[in-house]
Image 1 (tube, rainbow, N blue to C red):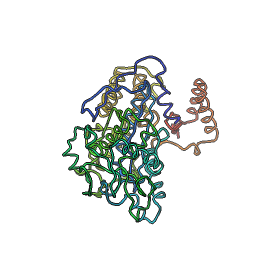
Image 2: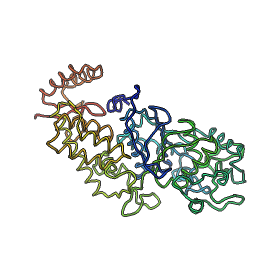
Image 3: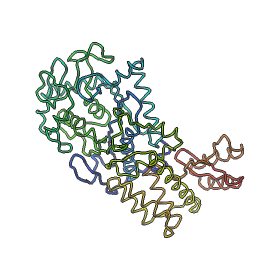
Image 4: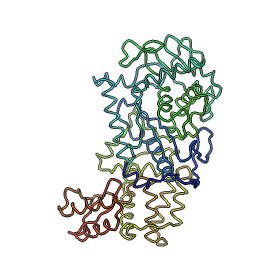
Length: 486
């Protein structure tokens, strides 16, 4: 997307310079590790996305924020990031186990629509929510599980042929005892996996932790396909392994998701992926902690959900929620309340006003500073966003830094944090259509000059516009105009 290219400056590791060190806490090892990609300059990242049987609450948006913060940090360091967030539109059952009713089918029947129309509607809402949070959805692939049925069948067939799967009347199951490393993500023991497997007792299963790869269809299943094991539908776990493999390759750099997915879902992904390929599935696993409310996880099943649409309806800028997320480290549980969100919104408004003052004082000229180095170090140390925000606040308030140094820091802060600090569209922002015709025409000419990199002409036109009583700032979605005189 154009705004992302402007923020990151189209940085790529085209030289032989070593990129800066970035550290991530890897759930696989339980330690903070230096990030080393498989291919120089390129990072592949897969994020477990939503099951689109209903609207996604704000707790479901935290994994998207995590992956976006990772992508921004890597891109700012010079990497090209290839991202995938899957859309589960079949296979995820009520109760998260291997038997029962499909969540999408249940909701489709209740709303008297087809599973596809239901999934399409909620997928669109989810992607719109990400976009509202200033996440570059145009740079992400959003594959649907139903578009990869043939690939999932072929994947399951490979596992059966290699002796890792066995058929039963109820479906095809993965034999966890055939995979010696099962449970290695997070060091989960076999007993813990069995206790948390959340599956019904199935006649013929060899081990309680064995999981279904392909499920035999029920007569009333709304989505079912032919397979070597009869009519049926895919298991929940095999979808992610298949789509990741199809879009990013057999071996990826980073896999992310909510912490609740690590013990079962992600261990199952590892087992089936590595059993099929004989290679490491994902080298770095990052998991975000829960978003809670009154001490409980925000969950549809608990009924304590808040949606981004609720946030907007109450008059909050969606970026206030982004700021709220950034105030806590991604691995720390975060408690939501409307008062806490109001505090985040107030802080963001003050930060945006400071940024506007710096933009005017610096005349958009930047220079390096000690604070800028500290900010980058914090972000590259396992995405320490609370510390990074603290460094940003301290530097902007300090008289020790020149305006150009503060503007340079804001350049990096906006690239990493995504808070639209370079030109926030605050309450005083004007729609282009509401501007006088001559100002609209100069604004268009200035934008054309900027695109052609004629910055001398662009600056001249900015001055002309300002002499007519309007201030122009360059935001991620284009110029932001505010009135400076009555």
